Length: 329
Image (cartoon, rainbow, N blue to C red):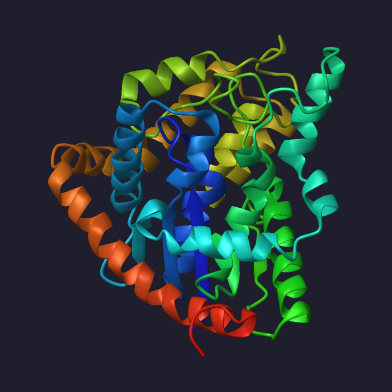
């Protein structure tokens, strides 16, 4: 049985894009794999979050995963900071990591490019947390010997860097680290938000997963469309893209046909989309509310998962320490 790893950052409410792009495919893969889900709170420190909000977001994310079907009996769900050993592996991996590899990381390149565009020094305001982010992410994956990492297309580079770091360590010492493979759900490309850009909290175009029915309808009604009449053929757009990912396959194919041939208005398409999203989210929304009302249960789930995660990581860390000459002979 393959071992999979999924890491999700607890920064704000999980939204529909998170679910379609990462949570759903990860949960589907977990049904046929030995799976670990990690709430990566160390990673969240790169934006210096409010500590009270951080703790709430961790519980919110744990509740979301369980509400959408994560089975905590067969799947390990844990908080990253309950496995401090990952910081040790991060340092060890960093010692064989070429700096140029991190210079090419998307997040770092984007931050430096923005600085240069505004006439600032390239590294203005960039902390080592952002620069070293890919090494910590690699440690998250490699410490468990994960074979597969389900990611969205825009996150593929992180897995490729983890592969590079595993190879670098194995060449420098011994072949003790498993080289993981990215797993990309081909059904889901970039999930669009209200304005057609990638759904993201930073753009403010997202739909929270716990949104009630009325909020879903209001959100869908604001999706930007053109002025074509119901009888006119239409190009695939944000409405159709989202509908494909939440509606049954036959219903999605029928709406796409009506788009291309003409015979459907945007008001009708939006109503269909809102209904499909509500049907997809309603059961989990209710379960999420129940879980958030019992924070002690969520803390117990995470504590138990933390113990299991440390046991999962112990073998890899022993092998790494032995290979590098750390600790007693």
